[in-house]
Image (cartoon, rainbow, N blue to C red; front, side, top):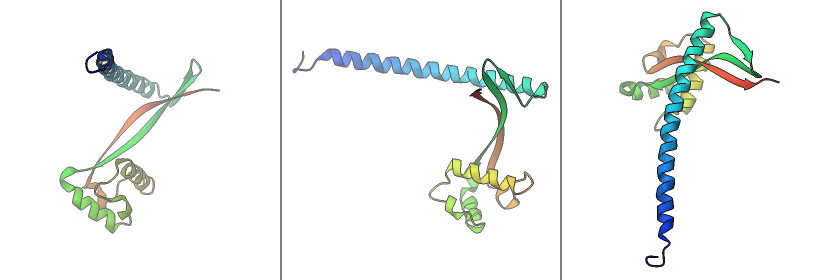
Length: 137
């Protein structure tokens, strides 16, 4: 022991940090595989014109999520547009991505699935079809 420190603790810490790094890499690889298989299943379900199906005690359903973010070069204009359209409470130093996402979904729901012109030029919006999996009863 050096200076009354158990140096095996340092060794163990290093081992754990290396194990964590390996797990993080494995997680990244697994997430990439999940994304690939999920998109293949989305395509297969869309081709088969299925909204959902059950298999092995789980229900698989198509789900469309809406994502929105401010265009970097138009962020200040977006903030002003939000303030001018009764949505200034979304604006702080930045617009919370989840709050903006929810707001855009609400705008679309109340505007025939269209994004109003007053905000359209200030944000990027895309939709991604995913699979929702839940245990069936």
